[in-house]
Amino acid sequence: MTSIASMLSVFLAPLLFFLPLLAAAQTSCQFLQVAQVPLHYAGSGLGLTMTGEINGKRATLLPDTGAGVTYLTRTGVERHGLTQRPTGRYVQGVAGKSRLYEARVAQFTVGPVRARDLYLSVVGETSFTPRFDAIVGAAFLLQSDLEFSLATKELRFFRPQRCGSTWLAYWDKNASVIPFRQHDELTANPQFFVHINGARLTAMIDSGASITTITRRAAHRAGIDLDGPRAQRVANAHGVGKQSVGAWIARADTFRIGDATVHDPEFDVIDSQLSVDVLLGVDFLRTHRVLFAMSQGKLYVSYLGGQPFDSRREVRPWMRQEAEAGNADAWYTMAGMAVSERAMNKDPAAAKAYLERAAALGQREASLSLGVRMLVQGKPEQAATLLRASLGEGHTGRNGALWLYLAQLRAGDPQARAELEARFKERSDWPRPVVDYFLDKIDGGKLLAASDTPARACFAANLVLLHEETLGKPASVALPEDCKAIREQYQSAGAGTDMAL
Image (tube, rainbow, N blue to C red):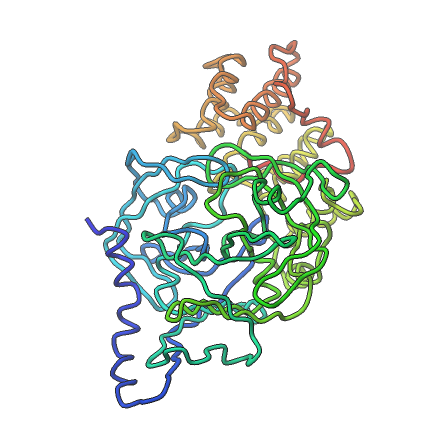
């Protein structure tokens, strides 16, 4: 068995082997770029991704400096036909603990680097549906010096030779220099200090997080009153783990990193027991050029302009630019923002138009959302067309199949039951209990009992009520506490945009 640690140790070997030979004759610092990897914005949160390969098949990878090591997701396991087995271990995330499984990968490729015959851990539970196949963690990314340049949407890997304390921010002689220490002896995550309202807090750059967050504990230390007029309670935050955690948007007086100060910043605050106070996300990276100088134990940071923190209250120019360039996920993200509780000015008409643009570009979650809207508005034939476009791998495809069954049932399609059985023939995990309910193998009460998270219980109860209404039966279940009726959400002009529970 090839361990993660041994796999990571050879990841860059083919690239780096020849560099000492090239530098041997040099007496001055040689800051050599050994790889350059394009970055993309993808998923419903427009997180950073890069392209790699798993077993020779194209894979979407999340470059995540906030993660210690490299993991596969359930999406990646399913998409690439991998076999996973339980390990008895767990990983801690924003939304609690997740079981870890293990899967063998014959070949794993990131940029020009290739590793063979290795075993990777699989994150078993997340409170959202990952669009990426694997999380590439700090132990790989930070083996060498690493530069994030989101202005050009690139990752650059460097190998310094004889550089010592030489200035490495080759693009800016006035960049801020921030010393860091390792997160702990087991991982490569650099940790450093920032100040919010004068309070010194531990921080980490987390390229796996779309937006910057601080913990509730840190907000308290910085004197931020989450019950005061400068804070707003928002929908719970999601991440690794089955659950979600409390979240707020709050404004501070100052944020300081190095010798740079931001006045009147606004952050997301989460009620999570993270090992660090502040996670500087992709919003921070988008407005800064950052070099992780691992060889020197410091960060070089240059401010590029713009708002360094983005709580997703309004569509930013970069998002619209992504959308207009054909990024379907950008249209979908903008649709959600247009009707979000975070929005400065809600615009339901714009949300619907954005969803339609996303669906036209093949964004399956948008097709799912529009299909559900049509179904509950009494248009099952139109709903079925949209819902068929949502079918495919992952949670979105499975949920789309459930809604498609209801649309077919309402439209009187005689193939509805047979198609549902065929689509879930080989599956035993969620949403298998919903399928069993539709196939009359269990009743609504047993379905709700089998729903192992609050979100799934709401989802299942709504399907039961719509199913019984379709068949002309009286309601046999009640919506669990704090659940909103799907009909209420999707008959309004401000219909929601995320059905991939």
